Image (cartoon, rainbow, N blue to C red):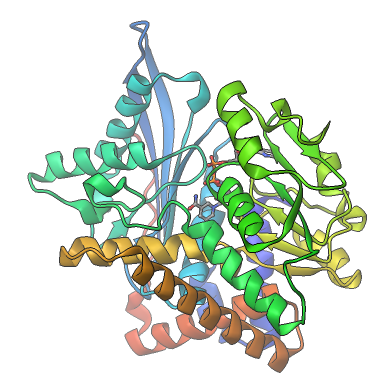
Length: 422
Ligand code: NAD
């Protein structure tokens, strides 16, 4: 089952449990707009290369389309559709006034120079220019895209529209309209949710062990933040593999070695292992912060963690969910666990639109409140319907989107699929 089918399966399950209006489910079961573009980019060696890019706008029922764009060799339309759909649910879960969208370009960013990445990013902006806007569709970083690329994105969009438009994209560097706290927001939001959930279940960070898959924006900050809260980090990984120690590893040493030598596996804080092995290592909490489809029916029964925190999007398949539920493993689902990222993106956009910038304390306090409220609401739905936290999260989001659809009327979700190459 691919990521998109998995997302639709999660939606159908929750819709059935809550007895959702079938027309609402039907309306939200396909994206409003799908754009495929060809991006010609001059490479450093003088050759011309054509890259395939996507922007999927799932729903603008509750506000402008919102969602990042990723650079990755395996990006495909189904994956971007799944991610865009999840964004609509995530924004509804977090109670922020956005719909969902997502983008991506099929490329190998690790093999490209800064100049090539800048030219690709500017071409992507030119190609999607007609369908985005600060009040219509607001992109952000995702896998292998970063604040520098958001700065190029903002610059190109401002140039094309002949005015300074910081609100066109979030995740920008502070110097060009970014928000304090955006870099750490995904991990920080996840940490606030985990902390609250543990508090409710009489658990404490001290003596609680953690393994983290993925050591990029989400995973690296999660390691630092959870370590700072008193959790014991036992293992981490990146695309080259993992390290694990049955005592503890210091994420700051891992980061130093990764920066200097290239991978977490170059750090001797723990013994090296494969990514697959790392997921099955003993720990209390497994943080998935790499990519989709990592826990499946093949390895779900081997997971030893009691709680899985999904900072990545779509890391657990529907089949794996059933096995984990049977084994009493609590899954804090992606659309809740990583919603801190889009929540602070929303704060960044509010600051851009008003031209007034907040101190970090204000960003943090507002993020914490949003995360705790989102969790409490989901736990209420979970109790009411006697279901998993993932289903509770989908129900929480459906409830808000269903109300918006009924209030706006059936014209609100205009269907329009565009497939064209430039
Ligand atoms: P990133 O590019 O900063 O980091 C990705 C990390 O995953 C890297 O360390 C990479 O080496 C590692 N990785 C790649 N393949 C792996 C594999 N097979 N096994 C283990 N590690 C692997 O990306 P990110 O922004 O941290 O995003 C990670 C996940 O979090 C994605 O699913 C993304 O959609 C999700 N997410 C990110 C944000 C955000 O604000 N950055 C917000 C919400 C969700």
